[in-house]
Picture 1 (cartoon, rainbow, N blue to C red):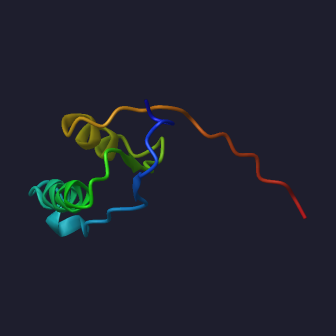
Picture 2 (picture 1 turned 30 degrees about the vertical axis):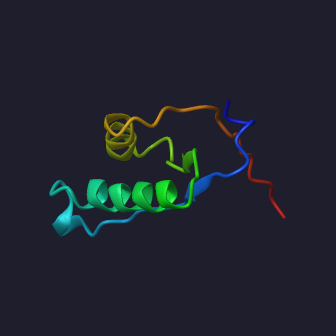
Picture 3 (picture 1 turned 30 degrees about the horizontal axis):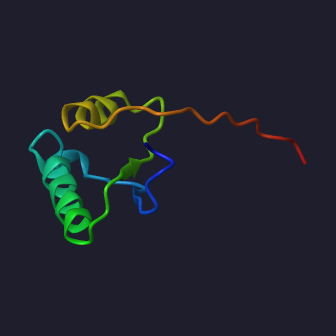
Length: 78
């Protein structure tokens, strides 16, 4: 179903200053993003979360987001 949907709302980054973390700010922002998507009849959200960011991964899972695939990178020297 992921590739059948023709509209996807991409969440590239949500950044919350450290002093405000753990207070529900990111969840609030995500809720607003979801409202916008629903209003625009978008049926799929996609979020980019780095593998080392386990707090963000846990938050995303608590909001119903599931990992679909992984990207692999190899830096090349000049």
